[in-house]
Image: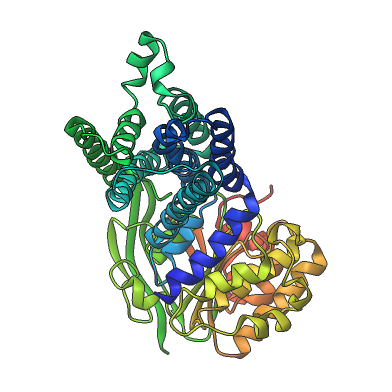
Length: 238
Length: 239
């Protein structure tokens, strides 16, 4: 366990030094909350409606961008291979990276809640524990996509291209930044293919104490099973 | 003689091509052993099979009596490895890389002491990428020593280094030998091999064309210096 925390500490520092996650997972969601907070300053209920969506920005940045890039990079630099000639296994390093991105997501969730709650009078009617469980489900589901992409992409360059192709449409069209409701119907249809769209619908329903669509939960679980299955079967350590 | 490394009948093919063909070798405890051969002769594959990062098709490999594939966890508590190219995350500092590597072992050496020994202590807070080639190579030997190893594998020890840095590294290696370490290295430089190695093997097309000491290699060839003898053994002599 000591091993894990030493690696977590150092890899965490390296990640902070990289700045990308600070910008895209911690600052960007807060900025979005502030902007929407000012726009809806008369009716905080609208901010509450977007809260679930904004909370997934960090999941997306870590799972779809951060994870595949770091996995492909560490494989290409043969860092994963180096772990094979030590008493531990390269999967330890993978577990450390997963933890780092999960921590970013949780920290981001905490930050946007504090900002929305303190400065913009937002209140959520749904259950917090249910929200957290749903959040973790969406996180696992999207992280599995990232592990799959990082695990099977032949090199960092291709990993980064695939990650961008997945990341930007998801960020823009699944409702994480632009509300799904204001999109034209055709765009909504496209958005419907993206797993994150369903994740956001779930989070929204839970946070506003509305009935949950079971299809959403099933899609999240299917995505998790398929992507982790592919990753387990085809993961390349070198 | 205790056999620290004992390989017999090692074979490995890729896509029907035999890269290594029934290779056998032994390395005695406390010896510096050099594996030589042209590019593509099978050096890297041999080392990878020895370390268990590639599984051999046939043959047995024992390092300190352990199977590197099956007993890897136990074995790599006592074996240090420096790969041909240095592998490290971007933006990692020297001491961070040391700490990260040290934590992988149950009983790791003190990296501060080693940094002092290798004259790298002032660089502890520098980025690994900012080190000179020689300093980085020393750092990677140091990382291999964090395991407090009984056996050290060094792949292409001084490729790409200037003469001063190479001599520095040779000194460090000889110092390690005085402490009783068994060292298995691969190299392209005959002066390096002559300075360091007690015994050598020369690989040609996946088989050993010579095993023995350097004076023996010279004696068995029609030449009177080691470099020409080596070229003769790999079949590339200058006409």
